[in-house]
View 1 (cartoon, rainbow, N blue to C red):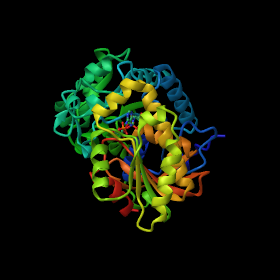
View 2 (view 1 turned 90 degrees about the vertical axis):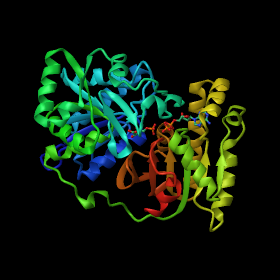
View 3 (view 1 turned 90 degrees about the horizontal axis):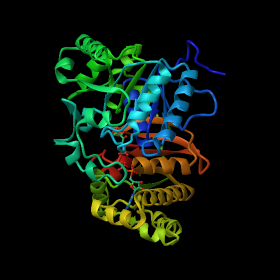
Length: 430
Ligand SMILES: Nc1ncnc2c1ncn2[C@@H]1O[C@H](COP(=O)(O)OP(=O)(O)O)[C@@H](O)[C@H]1O
Ligand SMILES: O=C(O)[C@@H](O)C(=O)COP(=O)(O)O
């Protein structure tokens, strides 16, 4: 039975292609006043909570395009059954995808299922220094392909021109709404949409340099059946549904228990965060992917080490990481293959995360999108409540798990988000 009544109507139905990205989007919606539920995968039953928006978190960024399409369409169907009025496909603010997709194929499939011939695409997220100018994506002060993303273990991004990147992945013609239209306000943006549509463009990359641009874009997106974007565009949408910021939207239960960090992200920001954590003298243990491949009991060793560290009153937080510099990642991938290395490390870190929670960890930081997907699945978490933001794009969340029946606090940190002291600062904000 659907509960999409007048009293509890899901306004925005969101499909996120990874789990850190899902909490990032939920965080921006909560900050703009929406009550948000994040589900892990497509739920088997109707929503049983009051929510203005639901974010269905998929782990579909790097799987085969046909499988990503199938999962996204299943998410769409469930969201429509909950009454969602507008659909938001969330991908990474660095537009992470392989040459085959999945941003293009999933967008095409959602457009077809929704019967729409036009949508937008913009990863702009100025709060995290992702800006789009003339269709080129900048991360901080440099173009995407100079930002470290050219060395990503799974989705190396070597072309900063989003029109070109997306055109290679989609059946639709890709166009551009550039900064000049945005600067002229929502009516000009709508006029540009109409002009592009008349030219046969199906997907428009949209420039945005600042939050004000996303607010303008948000107004122009009112009533559009499908929006595809990073999390930034979310700041401009709640107002279209008459929703305003609300300080209570991010309340979570009180935190307790032991503290730990697990990191499988090899992104530039995470490398810095691991180095900074180690420099504080706190306990940190590196995981060696080659030992996993040799069949060593890496999980068992890590948990025995963590148990000893956590027994020490000054022991926590502890850090277990596979985070490494690009040259070392390339060497591991050369020996094991890209997919096998990724999957093996994810599986081991996820088993360690589960073990840490079984040891009493109730405040857990996970770094890395794919890594977070694996950890949340290993913890058998079905749904998450979104709390206060630690850094832009990274909120604390609260979730139930069979390993923590009363619940645990967990944060899923995107690879390139967070200040260098994130792994210690996060615990101070609970
Ligand atoms: N030392 C390593 N060598 C090779 N691959 C690794 C190593 N450490 C982690 N990985 C893999 O790299 C990928 C990192 O992706 P992800 O977790 O999404 O991080 P990010 O959020 O930084 O993109 C995962 O598949 C992970 O298992
Ligand atoms: O939009 C973003 O940058 C993040 O929400 C995100 O999706 C990050 O993915 P990972 O870098 O794989 O954690």
